[in-house]
Image (cartoon, rainbow, N blue to C red):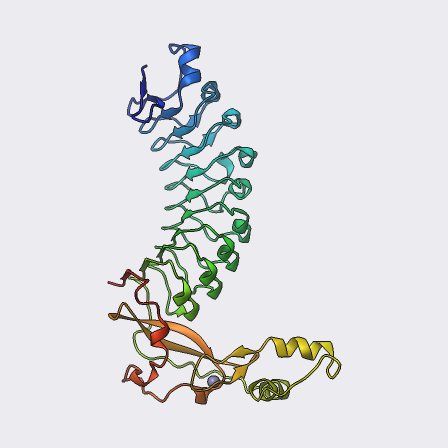
Length: 350
Ligand SMILES: [Zn+2]
């Protein structure tokens, strides 16, 4: 058992690929244990991560990938310097983790290739987390409490059974890499456009038919992968349209004709209602709408090469430009100039 030094001067103990079924560090001096900062145990036959791990009091990096681990003991909580915990390709699930794992100060966790069906609730208390990898598990969803992890920069959840994305995910100010490929996601919440730090968004192999129009405002997005989705390839018009209420019609007239109104003229609820007016995105219309609008899918050029179906809302069916299902809406390109072509460097469709 030799403790080496990494190029960055960290003390490393590498015990990978030794067929270990149990761990014993009796041959290692107390001093060596205390100075070890990185411990590698991948490709062994451990089923339990035993308590003796806590003897390595300076440990900042622990890799126990590719074992048969089904249980992680509470003693790991004593590793107060541990920042990176890698436990890929084991047999871990919700019942395997110490219940107080959330009290550690971990920054990177990689539990990809395990058996989690629920997002581990302990992770949601780890406010120091910068990177979470839970790819290749059996996750069914993402809890809305994900918004608590405000330091998060990378979230890898590819290869699960996720069907929807909570809008709260959009409240992560530092999130730069979001991987949701190989799931069963049918739609993207428009709030995702608030992820101002997002550089890479992987959505390939899902069940998406369109994207929210708001996605064009992701100013730092450099890579967007969409292959393997049933993205609509022909022009689609959704004809479901509930006629506007009298309240809505009156509100539209007040707003679109700029009729002045004052707090003393109107009850508070009407003032609030009028403030909720949304501008019709058709620049030739100039109208507004409240609750009644038409869902409309429109093709927009990205990179001058790909045409992506984006969803947006119009104030009325008359507002969409005339076009047939055979012509791909050349007359419908009035606001393509607003797409930040120079920003998106890579759109992967094929
Ligand atoms: Zn309109």
